[in-house]
Amino acid sequence: MRPKPLSIFLILFLAGSAAAQAGGHTLFVDIKVDESQASGSKPLSLHVLLYSESGDLILRQIVPINGRYRFLNLRDGRYDVVVEFENVEIARVRVYVNSPFKTDFRQDIELELRDSSRTSRPGVISAADIYSRSGEAATLFSKANKAAEKKQYDQAISLLRQIVASDPADFPAWHELGTMYFIQKNFAEAEESFTEALKKHANYALALISLGRLKIARKNFQGAIEVLSQAVNVEPTSPQANYFLGEAYLQVKLGSRAVPYLNEAIRLDPMGMADAHLRLAALYNARDLKDKAAGEYVEFLKQRPDYPEKKKLEAYITANKKP
Image (cartoon, rainbow, N blue to C red; front, side, top):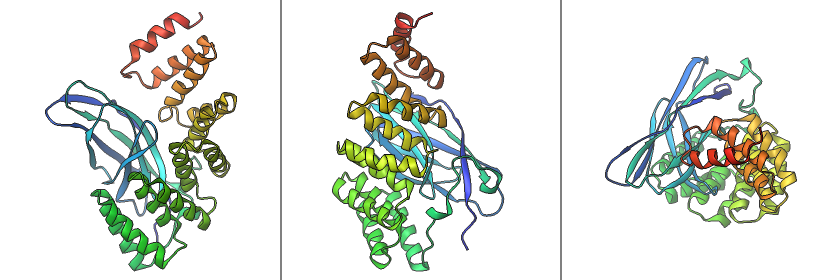
């Protein structure tokens, strides 16, 4: 019998720290989970995904509860670290990796685990999104996850292909397959796999969001708008669905349509979606609404006080914010 659904809430993102050393940039994260408010069966591990600023999925790892993960040989840039539980995104944080020297960066994430029956807040795992597998399929799925953790993506794909060949209705396996292809930048196969997941479960929000992000990466912005609009209808409390729908509208220069979705993403997850303030500020600045742009920068810095370009934003605020 499967454990009852649990909800996991992001409590705190601790500030990242850096210490120079030889070698490539390395990002370390400790995931700390408070399990004191949960009863019954508890998850043993979480998925951690690393996305580039443009939305490309770079790496995916399985991390034990209260464990550590690391991403190696990162270039200077901005990255999104995403935590998933049972294929549901539960946390997201923007990390800035930037140093003239080879550096270690650290970003801690603290979570709280609660019984879903105790709350109706967003983040509760829907029973409709849980799939029951046979013993053999469950074993293959576990092996695929372990292969992905070791970055053996071809092996993971092979194992997931076996699962969907024997049980084409396994929509989470189709989604995992799409994710592996996405990491490999095989966008055509990724899109086909995400589409198959949605054929089996049309309202599978995670697959809708993944497909929408993929379409943005492929610059099919109208297609992204269609898919992400459905994602918002299915899961209106998803910060990610709202954010990426807003981003898709920005890409087709429909700023007035983008604004409400970006603001909703911020309302739902002020810290995780803080970068929506930057997107809004850029929009307002382009329309010569500099006071509004400055206001967005003020709100952004409240959430990201350690932003590397803080002084630049503060100068803009000083020059343009009306008293």
